[in-house]
Length: 471
Image (cartoon, rainbow, N blue to C red; front, side, top):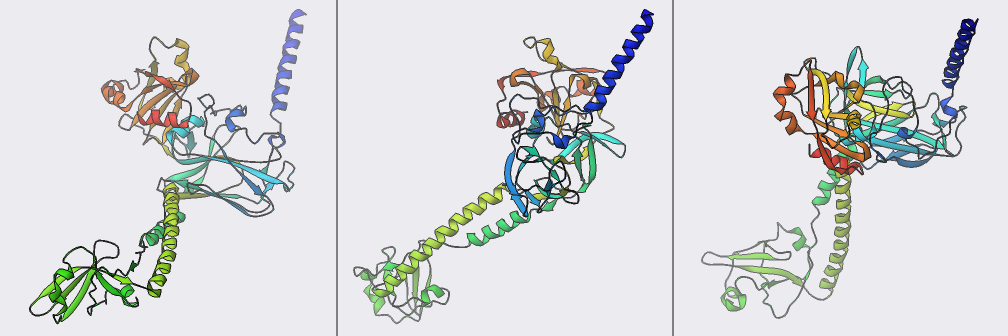
């Protein structure tokens, strides 16, 4: 009898747990309230497979927020060249009703190894029977809210994302992360296109660079000699248009006052060439027997000078304005990526432009990590990240996966481990080179990485970028 009662109690507990699991999975995510400040790492998500696990405390890639009116078309422009195109009435609430109020778009991108590591977003995927690690050409996360409630893309609508990237090539696919399962879904090929805005800015800069600083007019100086000879001005149309010009000695070269004979000669030709200073020219006088050259400048007096001065001041204003515009366009161009990759998305979420990498000849071994005697043994279970493939692949190795460590020793490789309290340890490219043979001979066996525990802590994205650059 006691055995029968225990058996019934066991069935009751089992049924209760099964019912609880079933009901917990039926919650409609569209009905949940999420603050617009909440990022994906702050939401408790139970993945069946990969999980988003940001490794650093209080350090993450920030979102950029935009406010849009749902009833009209919107184009969002980011400094790096990314544009987001949102047609009118794109967003609906959990019931499918069109949003009438303002919508906040939260958007962020991940391009560098530091970005990928900090995000904690898993970077392993499978497609067409091929399992591999992702080599990114850029990744983004996009969310939308209205009145602190998550909103959704209406059926039949899509949001266009033209993501900035400096990675060329058409061997990258577009992927969407399933936030429930942790698996990446392949959405098809993604080819890079030239960033037309960057090209446009380059052409504008080239045009603006041709604009020369205007030369101030010279006022007639009665103390200086005047050399009003018949000069050939065909190469200088701006001089031909000047009225009542007096060519005066600049004080540099042969002084006409010391060479009065030049005024008695009959010169057969008179030419000028631009001098080294703004309003300076070199005058060349020749005949069959003699020649003379000196520096001169065109001067004016009276109303002609006043008019020339006014024209100069206006030209100078235009020049300064163009110079400011040129500097702005240069700054704009330098911020812009070289390429963009364009996608149409029907859901808010996390998307990646990646190629799967895999090398059947890569080494496979059990990895162990030695953090030294000063680090508690419990810290050996922290995540270790392999940075490889031109620093565009970040592969997380939690403690449970270290028996399946895969490494191509012929590629660039660095390791970084994130310790508690934002401390970190490294194994640099030089360390890999120094241990190359031993690592190569560890295929199918065990290799222990003797990590270098650093004294600094990582307080922000820049700190991690600097730390990784040193590897």
